[in-house]
Structures are given as structure tokens and as C-alpha cells.
Amino acid sequence: MNEAQTRFNKIDPKLRDAGWGIVPRSNILVEQSAYIAPGRITITSNKTPKKADFVLEYQKNMLKMEKCDLLDVLEYIAYNSTPMERAKRVELVKKQYVDALNKEQREFDNLILQYYISNGFKELGANNLKTFITIKYNSMSDAKERLNMSVADIREHYFELQRRLYSA
Image (cartoon, rainbow, N blue to C red):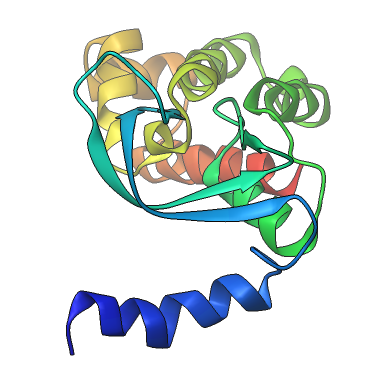
């Protein structure tokens, strides 16, 4: 099966089921030359274009949700839900969780949350925990001492912050 046949059999039906190309003012642009940069797609640009397999357009404006996570964009497309920007998600988590932590834990979480607001969900990868510890404390032993937590507790705390973000 070639790419065109795969698209016809598997992708096109899913897009139609979600209402794309059927719902008024929605459009699917296929095999579109576009300038693609992190968080945005520009159809006309002086920059060197790349080929986008699909560009979903609604009300003649492409979805502009670069301050939202992919989960929010997909929920918006599938369920017409209101997307939440990362900064708003962080604000809620700070009020519901982070503000109740001790000073050292709050500062550590605020560092993580700032990176998340700026760069998105990829900052929350398990591999990035070591990077955050290095930025804030230089070493795991210093982190354990300052946070007054074991390595397992620090890891669990990091994952709890993620759970709180995505349940906000």
C-alpha cells in the first residue's frame, strides 16, 4: 500500500468523522506547500516552503494554539472543547497544589513550570528531571538535601506535578 492509498483508507475517513471538510467553514488542505515552524504554519511565506501532508483550516484561519498543548488542540478538534493555554493551566496548578508546598519545593516546581509554559509538554519528559535538578541544584545529592526528599520521592513529586497539570 502506498502513501496515497494509506491516506485514503485510514486518515481521510477519520478527518471526515471528526467533521473536517464537512462542517461549515472547515477545510482540509492536502499536500500543501507551507512554511512550517514550531507552533505555526504559514501558507504564504518568503521562507523556503516544506510540504505539509495536511493543514486543517477553520473559518479561513488556521488553528492558532501555539500556547496550548497538543492534547488541548486534539480535544478542540474532536470535541469542540475550549483549549487551555499552558500559562492558565500553570496558574491553576499553582493555586491548587504548588502554593501549599514548602519554599524549596515551590521554587523547584516554579522552575519546571516556567520551562513548561515556554516550551510545552516536551519539557515534562522523564529524562528532563535530571536537567532541572542540575539547573537548580547542580547535583542530585544537593537536591535531596535541599528538598529533604529521597531520589524516589523527587521523581514521584515530578510525576505528581505532571498529573496535576493534566487534570487542571
